[in-house]
Amino acid sequence: MLPPGSDSSLQRDQTKRFLSDPLTLLTQYEKRYGDIFSLKLFGMNNVFMSGPRPAKFVLIENTDVFSAREGNLEVGQELFGDSILYLDGEKHRIIRETIGSLFTHDMLKRHTVAMNNIISKIFNDLPNTGVIDIHKIIKNIMLEIVINLFIDKDLDGNSIAKDVDKLIIGVFSSHPSNLPWTEFARAKRSRNNLYRILGAIIDRERQSDSDEPTLIRTLLKNNTNKNISFTNNEISDQINAFLFAGYDNSSSMAAWSIVHLATNRSVYEKLHQEVVANHDDNFVSFDELRNYKYLDAMLKETERLYPPTYFIPRLALRSVNYDQYEIPQGWLVNICPLLTHRSPLIFSEPTVFDPERFLPPREEHKKQSPSLMGFGLGAKACIGYALALAEIKLLIIHLTRHFEFNILNGEIPRNAWVPSWHPKNGVWINIKRINI
Image 1 (cartoon, rainbow, N blue to C red):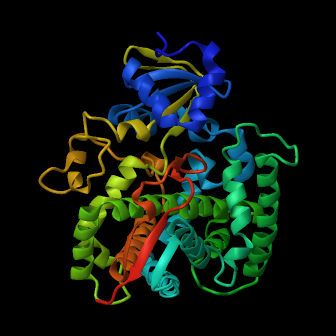
Image 2 (image 1 turned 90 degrees about the vertical axis):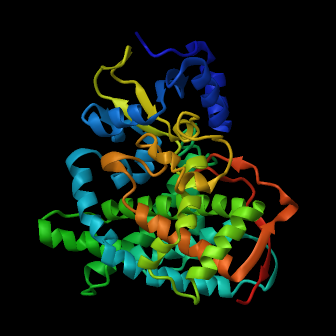
């Protein structure tokens, strides 16, 4: 039998509710039907599955049945092309293997030096006291990091920031119309602008003999080593994927972490003590980040409550059975970290922000595996996961070391779901520089 769910006649209402507040809608259906249920959204039959076992079934054990490329909306494929986000099979393996050289331990140590310098410079320029939108500052930092590490140090982030934002928002257009005033049409124009800028950089790099390991040079070097040629557009596709993940997703997760630091004095004081004990200057090495156990737990808790990827779509290429249910060919299957991360079967008081659930002796995440999948799972898990955690840790360490801060008006900001789950109107905090 098919997974239980609602009448397809409710599709319009369901889609509207899903776009505005997926957590409430999906939680209601999970309580009614269990860890597998169906919804008609965007004109498609969708199955939502929560829990570790379904995640392994779809994302690890049956990757030949469930397609990532076909499971994503055509909008994303048109805007991001053949990026690592939208590839399956051998081509995905080749791209991942090639750019994986940018995320070795030695490269992460090298990246950490550059990230320290970028973060220190921007924080040094902040006022000693005042009110700031830390989310906006975080986005500027993350964009500069992506540009410096992977594109071109001479590229001005301000010249591409608006186009990057429009491109990312366009991926989630519910009505992909080419009418000039639509989000999708604006995203396509921004994509074309970005590809012109990136194309000029790539052309220049084709003539360069520099050994600086950027994403562009890594892909160009692959042409010689493996006899695989990448066009300018194919390289730009990969850059856009890095901008999406390294700029938007990382900045949202960092922002939510700071929200809870700024609203929970106990969490702030525990982290501040750890930072003071471990950090006595403006540089933290990649290996030293391992010493920040409480910070690591705090970021796990942020990932749990605000997963950068809150559902993971795959298309069933053929009919398949899961327990007593049949998932028909052509149905969209969504693995749902949003629900798994809030399961009372895994986490006690799952709506409470409590970093210590990840520390001994509790270690709730070890009850079942995988219990955290906010950065994906399996062969298509985020390739830059270690780098993303490192940059967020560095940002929070520098902020906590040099500033006292609290949330303006003492309230947790409202959230928005597109393009990633982020504070809707920024994160406004009162800051006061401290000398230690």
